[in-house]
Image (tube, rainbow, N blue to C red):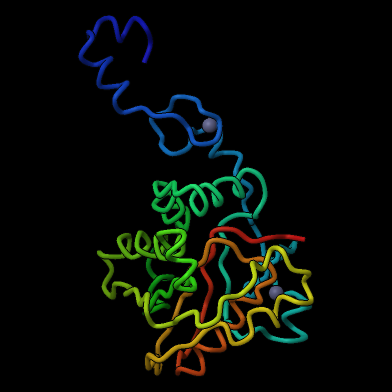
Length: 242
Ligand SMILES: [Zn+2]
Ligand SMILES: [Zn+2]
């Protein structure tokens, strides 16, 4: 609003505008587009064309050589952004600094995935579970927060998604994957999950904040398929590209 316009509209409008605007979580500029101002939003690193199985980018958006040689246990992966600046800061702000306002922002960013008919490929959302000790330390599961907001966005659908936060459990506390060399990540998560829910015939989307090597998501997909899931896809906020 221009200075002249706000002078004409009086102090009430100016106060309202101040009350509605907040600081952008990235650059600190005052904005009405919480949690990110428009210029910061425009700079987020998108993942345009990528392998439909593992979300690694490639020019034609075809199944990559790695997935052709050995198909992963999950059927598809959809990643909104590359895990690079400033998305890494946003993910860390949610996870380690409890900026819960970022969860609905991430849910909105899934865009077409949660629209019909895409979302109707899926019956159940399962957030990647945290080990109970880690959940107690953090106070919330960032994947469950994002999943909750995704569910809210499909309420008007003919077949709304359900969330099954307790279908899978983390039964073994693992080392943080990011601290391990790539070749140790699969063994680090082996046996990390259990599922005692009957998922017979269910089409599942697993929700997570970051996919790095995919070892955690592969382990979880195996467990969910053993529990009867007909298909498992991953919906992740960001994908690490090496
Ligand atoms: Zn900004
Ligand atoms: Zn692939």
